[in-house]
Amino acid sequence: MNPLILLVPILLPVIGGFLIIPASFKDAKKRAYYAEAVVVLTSVFVWLALLRVSRDPVTVYSFTSGFSITFRIDGMSMLFAGMISVMWPLVMLYAFEYMKESKRQNGFFAFYVMTYGITLGIAFSADMITLYLFYEMLSLVTIPLVTHYGNHESQYAGRKYAAYTIGGASLAFFAVVMTTLYGDAGTFIFGGSLHEGFNTRLMMFAFILGFFGFGTKSAVFPLFDWLPTASAAPTPVTALLHAVAVVNSGIFAVTRMTYYVFGTEMLRGTSIQYICMMTAAFSLLFAAVMAVREKHFKRRLAFSTMSNLSYMLFSVMLLTPEGMTGGLLHMLIHGVIKMMLFLCAGAFMHVTGNNYVYEIDGVGKRMPVTFSIYTLASLSLIGIPMFSGFISKWHMVMAAIGEGSAWGTAGAAALIISAFICAVYCLTVSARAFFPMAGKDRYAGNGGIREAGVLMLVPIVFFCVVDICIGVHPGPIVDFVSRIAGGIL
Image (cartoon, rainbow, N blue to C red; front, top):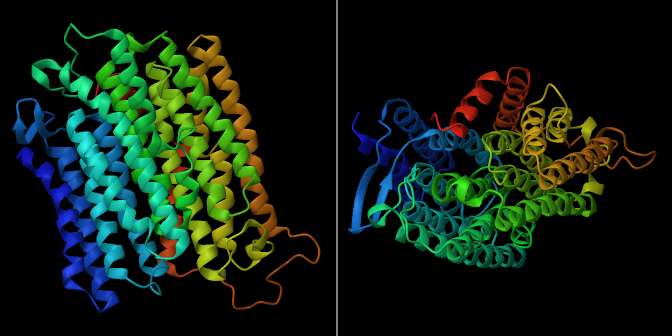
């Protein structure tokens, strides 16, 4: 199959999404059919590319020697692109129901669809230049989604989101320049090697800037404040921001830079490795405590996301195949779990018009499916056996202990402590929903509160089934990710 087919799933949603604006759909059903068709067709082309396209780099355009747009499929591309290709069409269904009363829907769905293509550009990038280009584009294309409501809160969230993510990318730019400069023939295809002659201290400095720069999208401490603030966006946006596109792009970029550019041999045992590990360990504990304190439902889940992203960063920075396996497993599994949690939270907020945890008291009796699935997702996020979250957390903890250093053991302890804190901030919501204190049931006698529409429930149920299936039969997923970490894919 022609390798240029890699361009189709990138360009199709970008062009197709953009055309929603001049088309100016006035019929919501026609717009929904069109947007869903573009997204589903994109996912079909993603899987055609994953299954049929060769693993050789494809240079689409070259500006100068060493500065080109190049794509390639490898194991990490397959994991990230396959993940979002399944999630995006389902969350689109949710968005149709959630946004039906909202204004400026043409603009919303235009950028929502375009974001899919930009994220695929990150997944298929073959070098740091291409990854960085799409990484910056992702920030720009998602700003209108964060500011969609147009009120003061969302405008403030958008400004903060832009400042953090674009500012973070400017830090990472130094790492991109340095690795491109010292790559073979003035470029750097992932998995290549840096040629001799570079200053080791300068390259270590470049790495730390890249870690915090790319890590900004993963809300690493202290560059995290944009994430809970961005909860002002519509729930279909926060689900993608906090579970798939933006935050996982940060994890993806850090992992690419660490294992496929600098390499573990250069970093292992250095102060830079330990600084990154301890920053991640502190971030995951800090965010877990902040989640307990947070009263706003979606902001609580946002802090939970920050905590779990730092799980991944810590595991990646162990610089072992086992650590990479745990980190990538959690990238996939956390995406499924957090998608459930955010979609359940959005369903509650959509139906009741309420936003805070203390407003959940008693709603579980009126929305039993939503909050039963929320509870199952919480158990998975905590790491209870027979759910998918246990699989990834087990691999991360064992990788940390197996790393053999005091830093790894301290990180493993932080992961376990954070799991206990996770039980507090997740299950208190379930307890309030199903077992309110006497006289505290806010929805007693309120027959108008019921489950959200079918389009919102279908994705929630689907992700719940996926979560349980991975938890019960994790072998194929673990084997696939282990092969990526082992350099086989």
